[in-house]
Length: 95
Image (cartoon, rainbow, N blue to C red; front, side, top):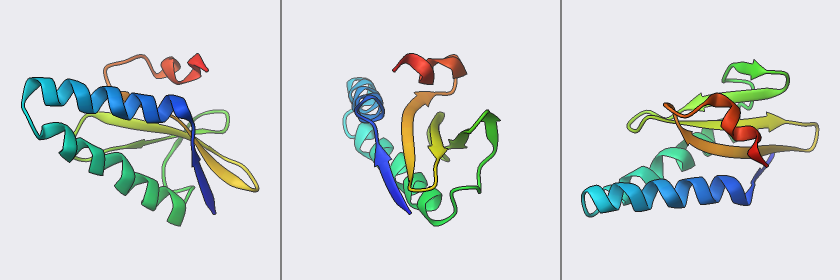
């Protein structure tokens, strides 16, 4: 199934990478792999992760404390946000 990543989710990833690189050079590059691994797993089995709200699912990264928020429709999977787990889960609704 086609997976589309909203620009807000891409911005979330870029902001997280920049933050980690400011803390320690090169760490942000490691973070980049985490959501993309999850995107592959979500594409393979979109219902693998729990539904946390009507139609919205959350997948957690392994190495970094981030969550991917997405919705599955008949035609595609849409990633809305990639947020630090300490942020309010409602933050994905900002768009």
